Length: 151
Image 1: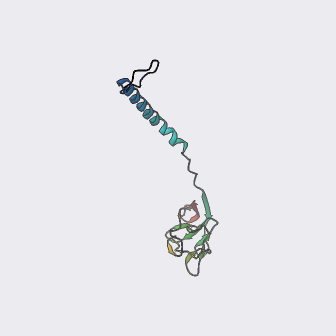
Image 2 (image 1 turned 120 degrees about the vertical axis):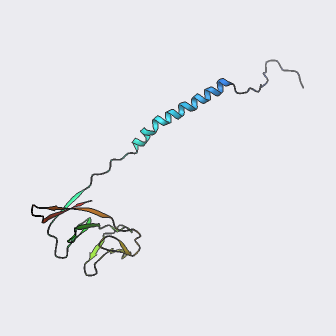
Image 3 (image 1 turned 180 degrees about the vertical axis):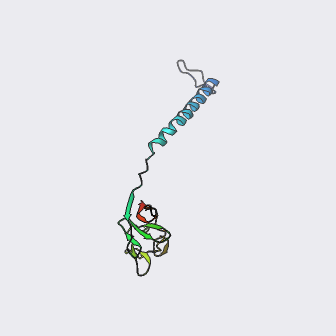
């Protein structure tokens, strides 16, 4: 080999010491603890307050057919109670209509058909119609005075 040149240092292979290893370990622990403290804050930034339910009151009595059609729902009144079905088709969002003579709900856009309970019968729609909760308001004698639909 040659003689060492004055003023130049030869690279010396240094093995990582214990101090360097401990420093890396402390950095990893600090990063992990920092992420554990930040995780709840990051989750909180994505939190959204759900909207309050909208209540729609339909006065009784219903028409003789027992069906009330509103902008957002179709209300079916029976002796056992009442059910409300969304008027928005689950296929492409068209507004559905109740065909009273055929006793089913039909979408005018692509002819998806549903039962009055909102169950899919036929058509391109793959899901049932959403069902809304209905509460009956009664007077002191037990007669229904209105239907409250929770959207």
